[in-house]
Length: 454
Ligand SMILES: [Zn+2]
Image 1: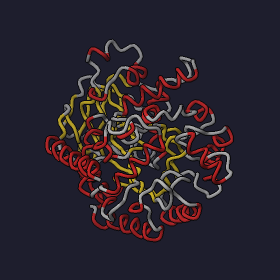
Image 2 (image 1 turned 180 degrees about the vertical axis):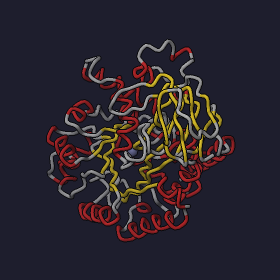
Image 3 (image 1 turned 30 degrees about the vertical axis):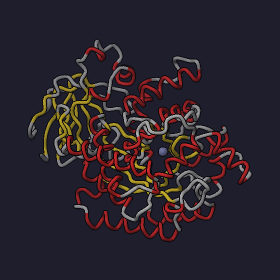
Image 4 (image 1 turned 90 degrees about the vertical axis):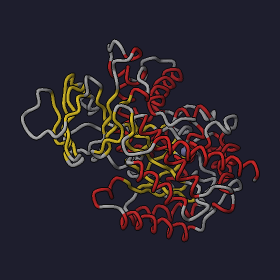
């Protein structure tokens, strides 16, 4: 359907205006929001009409940092802090096959769609076979989601198995092939649905300074962004101090030009005030992943301090191996409550800010803010409809707060990405849900068995 109209919706565009349209309509034509406003809609072509019946229409949520295939590893290592946990995660590379990545990533995408996420940023870091990255990209493409695929490189580190320690020149060649494959084999109208980034994985514990310089020049040469895990735990900060004599990870990365307008740093839990200034001055975005930070006992990211300084903060789930879900509604609530309790100040963060972090904040962090993240004329139609008439969402007294603190991902009824309806009344329209679940079960069992034998 290349044209349709959603009517009778409570529209929350999530622009700077902080407005709500109580009974509104949105027209979608060729994947783009061609009209939006208060009813009655002016005359004009409508295409088929979807009556939202007073459901809440939001821009789709943006998961700014995850590792999709890790849904196969939910709740497997949940009592470990970051470095021993990473050792296990990296160890998966010894038995990981491209099939696991496809089946797991597709399940991760299905969970995203069913939870109202329309864009995922996949931070990819285990590539024991050349096909691994491509299989994850294929899963995102098949899912219909908008995706950013950040292909990272590791070339050092005691806890990194040899099979995923790459020679940078070979890794860069593989990334160039991945980009070429995507642009050569994808239909014109679909090309922009998936974009790419490059990155170090968790500097400096698994990347050398030389590699950081090469990553910066590769990113510039291809006009793509950089994604990295940054200052996730105190142990990483201790490492950079002991091994490199720098006060923090951001300060260290600044030496190699890694911060920048197209850079997204996941976590940023342990930062000095000076490092927050580096993020601000360079226009670097942060993906805040509170559930994962809490699960691994990392600490509390200085979200309020970053927001006050004007740093763009997005929200991510992180992989399911440290979350254990891909639920961005849950992440919004946790992000809000964690700052309130950390600062012992109930008013320290407002729900509208949290909603913007989960939408336009993510879009900005991923270089997609002209494409999605708000409901505005001319943007791509990445939209979700959330049921309001369920006991836990009624009565509506403060819509923004209730979307963050009351709504559940299972309230999402309809999901539209790029003008394609991927879910209608909770039924996915383009995917075989049962088959994706059974194939992921099989892949998960196989992966766990290989891990047990290995
Ligand atoms: Zn991560």
